[in-house]
Length: 139
Image 1 (cartoon, rainbow, N blue to C red):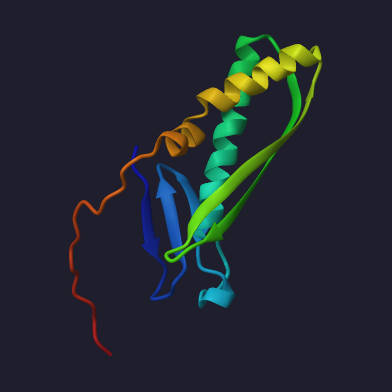
Image 2: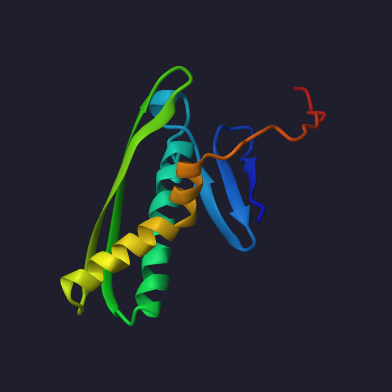
């Protein structure tokens, strides 16, 4: 898997893409950006929510639980220098025609198998692989 991120016209805003899909990335206006896109922290929390959502649908199908509605709300706090995420937690609202014990088994399965939360819980090394200095036009 590979994603690309490239700034837009000498601004702090950027476009992120993989294949044909794109997302706008930026810092908040309070942090010196234009505030026109998602911050990295917001994307991290969205990645957690997306992973839980995808896994709920995957395991619901395997358990023969039809989901009619699903919402995942992810919250996190940021602290430290440099700042890092802490106290990440999520809530799920779902509509499904299944007994409570089957729903609870589904939630447990999805929580255990969701790739992004699992990766964060187990820890993963992130390192700078390479860099290239490019020439920029002056004035």
